[in-house]
Image 1 (tube, rainbow, N blue to C red):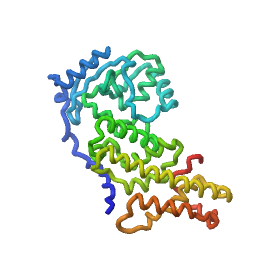
Image 2 (cartoon, helix red, strand yellow):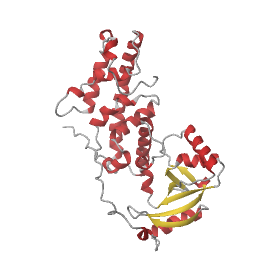
Image 3 (spheres, one colour):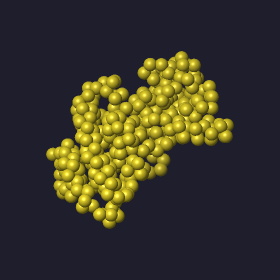
Image 4 (cartoon, one colour):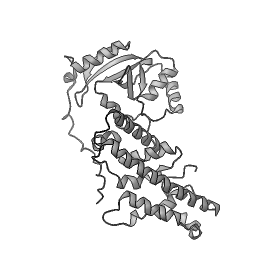
Length: 320
């Protein structure tokens, strides 16, 4: 039996003023052993702590600091830098003459600091030649893994999300591959993103949008160790890429017949996907991908008419 991924539930709206700390309670009067260690790391790197407090929701201690900009690097598993975005951000900061939005930082495993949220702000300040940068330094390094939840500065597309997730996955394996995959569901967001991340690593121009709904419905996080679970994702990714080859061949034949649409790939995948007609328990993902691969190989483009494409939607083809 294949378990469906649990439905996402948003917390109910709380009654105003009933959660967290009051303003006076946010004072951090007595440093903890963890904040002392973080403060020492800041001073060792050449930075300075300008304030400390407990954040108002969970009461976790934070150190408002100014760090030398050369001591800060983005987490190694982040999405690729957007050249356009960080240059535009640099222009805005330069025009206002103020840097008002501190980055989030954690102490790096070796020396210096990682920022899981603030890469574009960091690069914008570097572009402007800044010597230092303000940061909210968090004592818990696990925040570095929570990049998808934290990073709202620039919206992720599917490829960026998938690549970040697979990079986080590799990082978690390097730290301790024996831990269960299910323990990192919050960091990884969706199991489908792990599989798609493997696909994008192998084929950067892969169009994952048409396969995402299928993977999202049938993949779940398991209690298997990370080192075993990644092999399952890699196996599924190989099957998806194999299916994509057959789908691409069908799309090419449709174009040769003069059929033009930005949704040809979505059209073909919808035609070969039996999932929408299945009532009750769906098949295992591996079985579904095999069925779709066989259907794609037998796809008869001669039966497709222009009017068949009229109601097609979904993600447009990569080259559209």
